Structures are given as structure tokens and as C-alpha cells.
Length: 236
Ligand code: 1GP
Image (cartoon, rainbow, N blue to C red; front, side):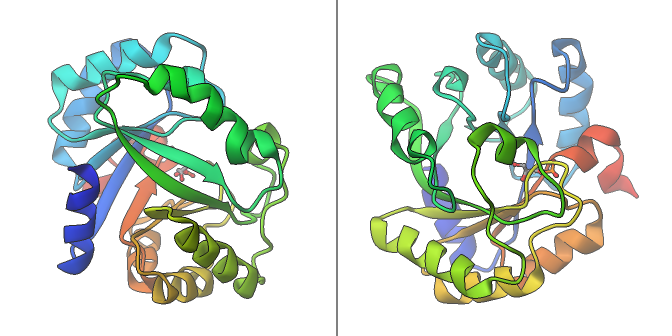
């Protein structure tokens, strides 16, 4: 259902926007006011997750968010312990830019028992880390080396290999709080070569940067830090 809607939006050239809620950075008491701000924003999806999230808090966050928003809630996990059955979907991320087996397959094997009998919509996603100018949490936690900003060809080949492997989405990530977002040229090259939808996130801090990512070919843009720092971000 979530994926079909993303496919439809791509076909109809409608832009999708996800707000990332990192339970490590906000408190449960902030959810009602945050949800109100999300309601007033152009967001079409909510992602929940992060590189480091304390165990057991995901359920609490997702249950609370569901009370206040109608938007689809998708888990964006850094670890199998972050999977909540109360969400609508799960980006089943495989970190294709890295060579750390834990993030390529190990976490996935460890998720199977958690996902067994779950109603979560599981969306196989090729996750590609691009150098965002400084070391980010995802880089530190995954202990992988991101693709260099000028290596358009490697980014393209990695994304295309993901598609050939059967991934349903490709996520180009500069890392949360990155100094610089994914370069325009990489988004453009990757989006043109893919038949599957493209997500872009990390270091996007202005409406102009959001528009640039869409112009380059992103189907869904993710905003985390900019909204965390200023919940009026979309009202400016
Ligand atoms: C991180 O792409 C997201 O996975 C969002 O990044 O926090 O920099 O917006 P920011």
C-alpha cells in the first residue's frame, strides 16, 4: 500500500516529503505539538528511527504518533531493536555503499523473528551513503566508508546494482546533520538511471535545497534536523 502510493506518485510526478522523527532527539511529551506542526506541513510520510535509539522506546513513540497523525508511519531502523509493529511500514535497509556484513545482511537475519507474523509493510531498500562533508552518526555506527561526492559513477553503479538485486527503493543518504546534502549531479544521474523510486536525505536545511533535490530527480525527500531545530521550518 505505502509502496504502491510511492510508485503512483512517481508516475504522476508528485513530490513526496517525509519528516524524520529520531526518538533519541525528542521526548514523548513533544509528540502532540510536533504532530500538529507536521499536520500543517507538506509532509506526506513520517519516518521514525535513527542510528542510536534506546531499546523499547520505538513502540511508545509510534503508538503516540498514531494518536495524533493520519500520515503513514515508516520505521527507518538503525538496528532490529527499533522495529515497532505499530507502524505501517519498514524500510528494510541494506547499506550497499558499505562493506560491513552486519548492515548488508546480519541485522536482516536477526529481524526475521521480529518480523514474523507482523503486518508491517516491508520495503526492501538499497541504502547508499554519500560523503556529507563530515563524519555522521550513520557512518560511525555502521563503520563504513561513504561514496565520495565526486564519484558519480560509483554512486550510479551502486544504485543500479541495488535495483538489479531487487530493491524496491534506493535511498541516497548524506547522513543526518550532514554539512552538505547529496550533490545534485549524483541525484540526477541516479534518478535518471533507475526504474524504481529514489529517496534523498541528509543535510537538507532549506526549502531551496528541498526543491533542488526534487529538480535533480528525488521522488521523496527526507527532512530531519532542520525540522527538529525549527518546527516552523515549513512556514517560513
Ligand atoms: C537522515 O536523511 C535523514 O537519515 C535526514 O537527515 O537530519 O540531516 O535532515 P537530516
